[in-house]
Each structure stands twice: as C-alpha cells, then as structure tokens.
Length: 107
Length: 415
Image 1 (spheres, rainbow over the protein chains, first blue to last red):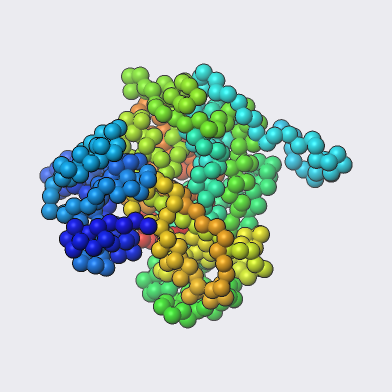
Image 2: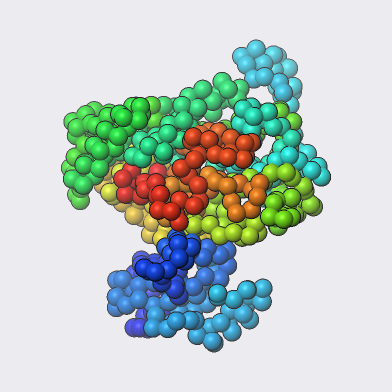
C-alpha cells in the first residue's frame, strides 16, 4: 500500500486517506495561448514509466494539497514536499539522481 | 492449418489426440516486413487478421514483448456491449459486437461468445435520465437497448437487492445482445488465423527503438535484432506512451491500474452481466461457475500491473450490498492490468506525426469488447493510410480541435 508523508501535518498517510491529483508543476495556459500550448496543458500529461512528480491531497487528514515524487514502475516513493513551489527541491532531485542514474530529469 | 470440426475431434479421439498440431508457429523474425504490428494482444492480432483478410496484406509481423494475449486481453472481465451514447462510439462498438457474433465461425475457433444480456443499473435519478437518454440515442443508432423498470430488473436478475442500504435500484438499461466471450480464446483464435495466413507472431521480443528516415518510419530495434518495415502499427495499450516516446511524439494518455477478481466456483446464480456504476462494481458468472468481478481504476499513474487493496474492498462492498447472496463467497484470484486513459475516455485510432506509423490506443477500461471492430478499423487505416468511416472521428488531433467523443459521463466509465 502506498504511504506518503504529508509535509503539512507530518502524518504518514496511507492510500485511503489520500486523493490523487495528477501531474505536478503544470504550467497553465489560458486565453491568448496557442492551440498547441492549450492542448498540451489540458491533455498531454507526462506519463513516464519511472520517476513521476504528482499532486496529492491529504483528503481524510489535514485536507491540504502537497506534492510527491514516485516511481510508476516500482511504486517507490522518493519523497514529498509542500505544494507552494514551482519546482522540486534540489535535495530531492539529488536523491532521485543517486537512485536512478539513467533518469533524464523532471522537465 | 487443420480445421477444427466434429470430424477432427472424432478422428483424434481414435488416436489418443496425437494428431493436433500447434495452433500457431513460433518463427524467428525476418529482416523486413510490409507491416509490423507492435503488440500481440487482441487489438494487435485483430488488426493483423483484418489486414490479411480485408486488404490482402499478409507479409506482416506481430511483435510481442511478453506472451500472446498476456496483457489486458487476458486480464479483463470479458464484457461485450455497445450501448454507448455518442454516434461514433456506438458505431465502432456495435461493429465489434456484431463481428463477435460470427467470430467463432469466421476464425474456426470457439471463442465462447455468449450474448446473455447486459444490464446497467440506474441507482440515482441522474443515472435514470442518463440511461434513458442513451436508450433513445441507441434507438436512433440502430443499437438494440431498452429501459427496464425495477420489477423487470428483478425478473432478469432475481438475486438482486432492489432496496440496497445506500442506493435503491431505480431501473436499468438492458442490451439483450450484450454478453461475454472467452478472452484468451479471442487472442488465440486470431493468432491461429494470422499464423495460417503466413504472418509471423514473434513473442518474447521487446521493441526498444523506432527508426525513421525523413520523417517516415523504417523499422524497429528489438531484443531479437533490427527489423525493417514499410508501415508500423502501435497497438500496445498501457505502454502506448512509452512506445510513442520511442517514435518521437507524446500521446494524450495516462496509464493506470485496473483490477479484477474471481470468486470460488459456485452453482449458477446469475445468467446475465450486471454493471452498477454508482456503487462501482460489475459482475458476471463464468461457465466454470466463478463470479467474475471488476471495479474502477486506481486514480494515479501506475505501470506495475497490480492495484490497491482498498479498491478491491470498495468493489466487493458495492456488490455485496447489491447481491447479498454473495457475501460469504471466498475470492480466488485477483490481478491488475495497465489501462491507457484518454481525456474524453474514448480511444485513439490515428495517424501520427511520424509518417507511415499508426497508433491504436486509449481504450482505457473497456477495450476487450471492441477488439474485432478496433482491428477492422485499424487495418483499414494501416492498409490505406487514411482512416475509414469507423476510425475517422478517433484521431489524436481531436483534443487540439475540441472534437471530443465524450463518454466519460454519459455511458458510465466502468466497463
């Protein structure tokens, strides 16, 4: 069972307490953007077999959104961090790079 | 290929069944093919079969990283129906359902198609309105479905509890010609027919790269070496995004785990397929007597072919409150498959940014029922280079252009 530590309240929450929220660090496009940008924002989600950054909500806990780095091929969790950021923390990226030398980076 | 018939059984019965040959060959790959299909599941094999049968293209290889029919084709709950809301969906699903009716004869392989009837329960007033609307749409589309009252529901499925603890049964949408088929047999039947036409089914051979020259596909790298092709069809379900990345484009799909389970075998209790989308569970009984049970997907990206425990609990809770008689059954086996979900929950059968490379994916949680129709439409696209009437609405550019084929709310996404 997936266990993620909520960075807001510090609880090690298991899956039934959590609601998945899809890809993290989306750049939003709205009126005035090109068709390609808008389509990519709406539909072309990253779907990697490997390291994935995603949004979760501690729905049956503190109720706050947070972000997590997880491997979709093994379900290994690399770490969680608060949602108030535009990119993953440097120490988390270093940790993932150490574990997955072939990883091409989060962008 | 030796035809299967009552005479063949009688002949083999007299010689200890020593004369049955292999159903399909296991060849080494050639250097070059006219068409390579990646993925020997139901959709890939059906594509190859109709390429040969309808379009005369028989220099075809079907490459499979695992074993034939070992992905979602062997992991689904074998439900066949075509009661969709949108015209383009019901056209392709009804084509598939009608092909299933004669598929055993067509392939000379018993796929055990059982049009036992399929019932989708309406348990909220919203669902009642939605399914009545679908019934009306189906009548215009020439798909035979009808609305059943709660009394009629009780008649077709006597073990149902109409007054459940959470949601009462307010009626149901009934498709008498829906049902089930033996999922493995569909893959095996197509494989045997493809092999008989001279096509090469290459198992245990994983594609590791896609080659292109001037924007046109020229072949693939595999764990069994380089193989050249004039045209490439990608039909790999859950791993569509991974193969598309090799071919240099991104797909609007996300891969998630969907689980199913079967109970211990019991005497016949339910002779139709029932789907309950509000409480989220569906059930049918196999010929062996096992109850075949499915539910919803896990909500997060996953490639591991195993799902979360709480979804099993959720599904079983839903079914126990709908069918209290099953509450003490033991569950025998549980498994997961990786489904590729699109934004509008409709499939993609499309040309791609790479020349002569075609993709068939995005069937999400409901691909099995579509296998013959999907293969038919994909074969036409690969053979002619342009989609025919069945596939024309399902191109991957519909997301950019806003031409969604929205089945996510209307027809119920549980399959």
